[in-house]
Amino acid sequence: MSSTVRYLQEVFGLLEEYEFRGQRQVVVPREKLFELLKFLKETCGFDMLVDVTCVDYLTYPCPPRWGRFGLVYNLLATETGERLIVRTFCDVETAVVPSVVPLWEAANWLEREVWDMFGIRFEGHPDLRRILLPEEFTDHPLRKDYPLQGKGERHNLPVITRAEG
Amino acid sequence: MPLYRADFVGNLAHDEPQEYLWTMNLGPQHPATHTTLRLVLKLEGERVVDAMPDIGYLHSGFEKLGEHLNYNQYVVVTDRMNYCSCVANNVAWHLAVEKLLGIDVPPRCQYLRVIVTELARIADHLVCNAAVGLDAGAFTFFMYAFNPREQIYRILEALCGARFTNSYTRVGGVMYDASPTAISLIREFVRTFPRALNDMEQLLNRNRIFIDRTKGIGVLTKEEAINRGVTGPIARASGVTRDLRKDEPYLAYRDFDFDICCATGGDCYARYLVRMAEMRESLKIVQQAVENLPTGPVNVDVGLRVTLPEKPQVFGTIEGLIQHFEILMWNRGFQTPWGEVYSAIEAPNGELGFYIVGDGTDRAYRARCRPPSFIHFALFPHLIRGHRLSDVVAVLGSLNIIAAELDR
Image 1 (cartoon, each protein chain N blue to C red):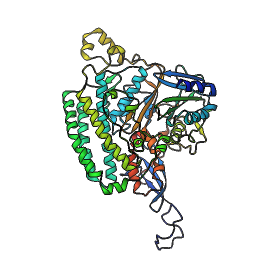
Image 2: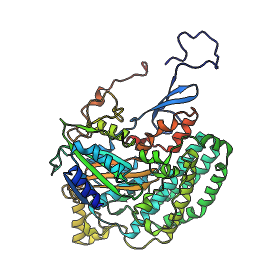
Image 3: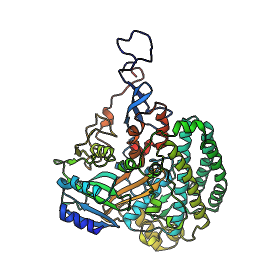
Image 4: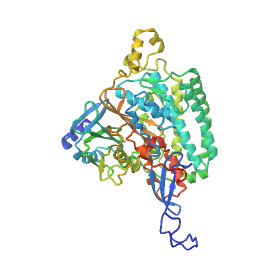
């Protein structure tokens, strides 16, 4: 495992790698993300993408220095059972990340959910639409500057009466 | 899409080649979807050319709520995710929190959690297979499956007072220790369930109609299963020999003797068979756990400042009283490290994981849930393409989609 990480360090220039509670995380610059994931999938045997998610560090007490949004790619090698979490960071202005759907079909809906909830665009995604929220929705509710009770969207929903419906 | 072409002049001749596709809407309120989800099907005659899932009808912002409720309060929300196996979600959530805090629960608590998780797995598989049977026309099977499910709910009621949404676990322990009544109910279930399972298998395993409806339908190959992130019984039915209980043993799963059930067919029938076989293995685990239940406390030591002390301690000792207040006061609570963990368990439906970001307070900074239903429902258009309209319900049932977990 550590030899893989050392190799990644040399080839892709990891920003950081650390371990917490037995889980290894590597932080990679956004430009190298796709290459690195492709290398991990094709050479290191990480054949399953377990999860793609994001964390908004806007109000975090010790925010990471690379950006506001931290994407989380949760990888698993089904043969060996190894897990690796790959992180990359971006800001509101640069919220575009290459899509990994060409590598894993599983990323399709997961990336749509991240777009829906955080407003991060995935370049090259075949069908980047909102998935859980309605098409008309304009905000991204899992961002930390979005209030828990919403911004009044529910009040503006069109009311369909029994006579019209 | 109109039912007929504009230039249609009568004569319903079916031998003419059809030059257009019908669009059919299934759901969001439809008895065969079992939950609130919508499918837009493109049909050529009775053949499904494409399916477009439309989800989000039950979206209630669980992950946003997780950032505003503390680690013990949020367990109530996890109940509402996969409501066929609530306790499994509770266990998954609190295992993730305990991993973040770096604490291990005592053996008795581990065994109790194993027992409830396996009971939940049996209940979930019963519901899933019953629904597959029901949609394929086997109503009697449905009744046979719901009878033992009722027994499981009675056990859970004896354990924690709630039948459906249990919220049984707490950070560092469980809500109540098992009473002798609960233990005897579990023993009775272990004794009687194999017979019910045999009856069910005899009803459906070799049933010609059921096999015709499910065999070769919705085939998922092993490579596709891995590429699409499929886990749990669906992956195992496609030949992926992976089970987190064996591969990354959590709780006390190392202590038990059980097998991983796999199949190679990858179709609806294989998924049905895997679920039936898994129930038998789960029952083995329950039996071993309840007969070897260790003695001792169910909660971690109060010195770790995550669980409430016992009432005699609170009322009788000054330390107990201080501990009690330390946990309950809004500005104290327990403290979490600044760190991020991903912890997953083998839930009945597949890998149910939680990615928690701790920020020092007793609330998660981010509580991401990796829901198996979400990943599995993304498969649906792929599985149904080319099949008949009547196969939609068979495939949908065998994927065991729970919309509350799908939309969260």
